[in-house]
Image (cartoon, rainbow, N blue to C red):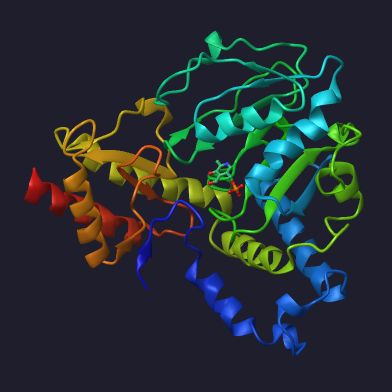
Amino acid sequence: RVINFSAGPAKLPIEVLQRAQKEMLNYNGLGISVMELSHRSADFTKIITTAENDLRQLLNIPDNYKVIFKQGGGTGQFSAIPLNLMNFKPGGTADYIVTGTWSAKAALEAEKYGKINKVVPKVSKYTSIPDPSTWNLNPEASYVYYCSNETIHGIEYQYIPETNGVPLVCDMSSNMLSRPFDVSKFGVIFAGAQKNVGCAGVTLVIIREDLIGHAMQTTPVIFDYKIQVGNNSVYNTAPTYNIYILGLVLQWLKDNGGAEKMEELSAIKSKAVYDIIDNSNGFYYSPLDKSCRSRMNVTFRIGCQEGDEALEKLFLAEAEKRGLTSLKGHRAIGGIRASLYNALSVEECMVLVTFMQDFLEKHQ
Ligand code: PLP
């Protein structure tokens, strides 16, 4: 197998893939695959309950938070959040901290359902997170929304925003379980599984109890947190196989030191790549403010600030030859993006670092 740096769907731990392969045709001696198992069967109930319990343990989730596993991706939650929370307070307004493409898309979607206040000035390029002291937060807002890791630009918050009691909603799709954090600081947390916690097709949502039951009347049943929580995520057919894979990833995380260990390893991996960038005399170039560089998605240009496209093409081609795949930056910003999610080992990351050093020496 090659080393996969894709931003998502992303690399899974090999142990998870091997276990899924082993159980593919005959799960738990049942003689059928998990894919063929009823979402209401006792065996599937055990899979989903174990996944929830493992998640609760890994993140130390307080009892007054509910967990659901839903289809619709992160984008589905861009709609579900305003549908469920916009009317939490009279006035129906929400604050959005837009620091990249994903929070911008979430804000655009929310505008359909209420009044949106963008708390930081609009920028032409996302390269930093404006200082929280400059945020124009509205104390009457129903919620404050942000994205803790902007996957496209590689911008990550290294802190949890303070909102003075207004429920905080976070899109953690691309840094979920990459470090421990205090769940009680949040109103709602969601994450598409396909980066750090599983494969595409299921989205994790963690919701504080008092925020459930405020959905707009027109909320589609599939997005109504009260209905989904009340039916333990199986109001309708759940994405059963994806939940099973997610469960295997959570088990793998428990076996490998949990979020604490992932934080330690993420720091080592990302530092190694950023060190090469910083010590390359501008050959590798990152426009980002160092205080918000992502540990998950390292983005950079090669050759000059705007990127020498021929050199970047060569970098990608030579990387492929060395068994390093999916390093191309997002089409919106170009350049290179190395995603260093939990399933990527330090050793695998060092193969990239060595390649970057060699490429630098050859082409500088
Ligand atoms: N939020 C973030 C941070 C993402 O990186 C993505 C996708 O890459 C999304 C949301 C959208 O997720 P989906 O494609 O599952 O709708």
